Length: 293
Image (cartoon, rainbow, N blue to C red; front, side, top):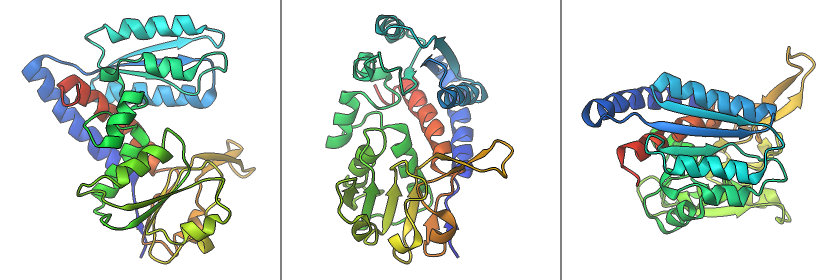
């Protein structure tokens, strides 16, 4: 029987662990983890993501500062708030919700965040530390994937991990995580992208397939081998007249057909997405406690 890799369950476990750790941190050092969240514009998905992060902070007893700026805010305004949080000792993590409006340079914004407060793990220094295997902030979605693999005791040593997608947010960092020489990785890694003349040639070799391309149900049953472990990062909205909302959320993997061949698989929703916020909170706690500094 195919094992469902339950992100809801694991994120709940992490939440309970963080509640206890945060109580200890407050009692022993008088520190409450603080997260600053900045949203520019009215993108519905971004608004929802920020609201979920704010709610998670409240449930953990973290301090949260949420700044919502209008769409036409200029880059200088955004940078001024980030600079103020960089020097605020009560703020241990800074997150700027992406994507930003086109007139704001995302690279400038990301690089303005202090690497010591880069809980999203997007700063070049954080990425560089990841590549060479030094301690640092790992981007939250890849960190969530690695945590699911670890907690479900999925064998990774010498396994062929195929990553579909090469984004800076998921594809590149998870590839770097999985080839690190440690007990929860040590894998052989292939990255696939749009230049692949035959994507199936690579995906059928995967012992562990990580789909992070943002195309609904691009991975079918015929694209994978028996016993594969599937990690589906996709969150795609497709029209569905039978749904009250008029749409439903699906992954990059055709779940119903692929689960018949997979040994383990993440559902969408209920898989990797929930882990992203949990790992953001874990990074914030690590910053506050000094585990990452």
